[in-house]
Image (cartoon, rainbow, N blue to C red; front, side, top):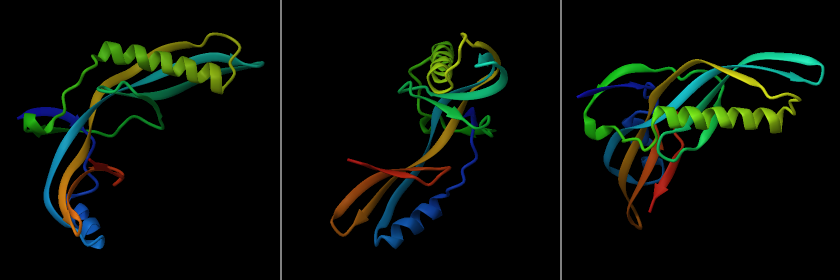
Amino acid sequence: MITVNAMPVEILAEDVRRLLALRECEMEDCQVLYYPYYYLRARVRTRILSRKVDLSMYCAVDLNQGAEALLDDAPRTVARSVPPDQVVGQKLSSSEAREKAGRYLLSYLSHRLKVLQVPSLEIEEEGVYHRPFWVVSYRAKVGRAALVVDGISGAFHSLV
């Protein structure tokens, strides 16, 4: 077992089973995987027109694809012991992700908020967290299929 900081699972395997049943499908297998993300909270100081701005911003970086996103708040996590085969490995290091997050925040500020001076960023908090996803195989009228279900939001994506 290894310990990861994981977001609590909100969509359970039984919820996935019910979703499939509504679509007249039968779940055959359902395994949870924990996917890695980096996050940081940065103190941003800059000037927009004649107004000084001093705020905290959160950013997440997918540690495999490198995609960045703004967060409303720091992810809520709990330390969880899980089998190693349920944890997706990561391609980016935390330092690579930190650089990507910093560039993303600076780009966001300069393009979206039209800042007049280069913002200063001070990292206040950072870490790696894991988001739960269900990998599901099921049987439908047309045959077998698979999908991934987000264990927090319930959003799903078909696997071809």
